Image 1 (tube, rainbow, N blue to C red):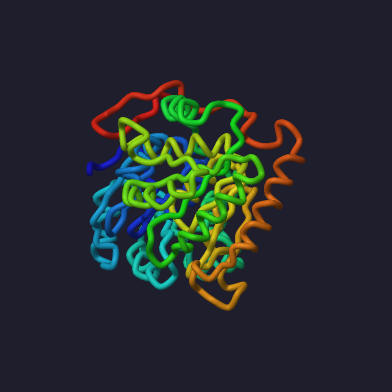
Image 2 (image 1 turned 90 degrees about the vertical axis):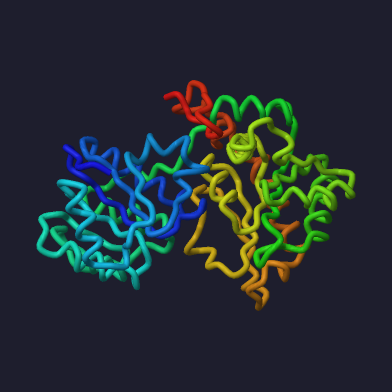
Length: 360
């Protein structure tokens, strides 16, 4: 970390997983647009996926990542701000209970400050006092940038498809193939029963659509029970030579899929940046608060059936919801979905270590 000659935007976060970081893409795009001469610095108390999975797109959105910062300490936050140089704006995106310390730390400094607090009440050098927060986290965080810059800004949630990932997607599933992606996620507390996944795949296949299971590196053992149904295709780490490309392969496949069906996971949020149809099977999380970035989002919540366990979601309800999506997709006018749009922002891809980096 070095003192910046440019004015700094300091974004405070906590232990960003893939879903958290994806939902903040509109924040960084809005900051880039409204404050083009500023240096954007993201500080986290633990690690962040911007250093791993999202490293290929990080330079476009964030100038510097700082991890293992002591953001629970008022004195440490204040020291961090001084080390960075001229901090013009502080955005604390963490939950309400974590923001008072940063508010105190910024006291007496000329920087603008706003936190993700109830009513955005924790603010300094920013007009207004109280405003009801929007219903989703993504909209709340984006609204903080609008309040800080005193202007309305585009809500731009897209992430471009990498050429290499697109080519791999076409190799695995040729153009013109009708398919639906299925992402079961890890076999933990948000897992739908495997028999329900295979039964769903059979329903999809009976309609002449190819079910494609998308398995992350920690989920490859699921291939064993998936392949027993005899109707599904599996895309996992064994499908690509470079494992770092796998999430971006899923991202590229989402561009052509009729729909992606996903348990609550970072993958669901990543594919949502292509703005296609997504069906989320929601268990313990508050699905409305963590709603993905696609405008074409369907959800089935376990809460609808008196439970907080994903496994309690009935198969017939998911089948009915998916049939609704298929009807919607078949009736959509040409050009109304991102699948007909050109790829943006990336002309090619080169490998730096194990991480693919876009050439923009």
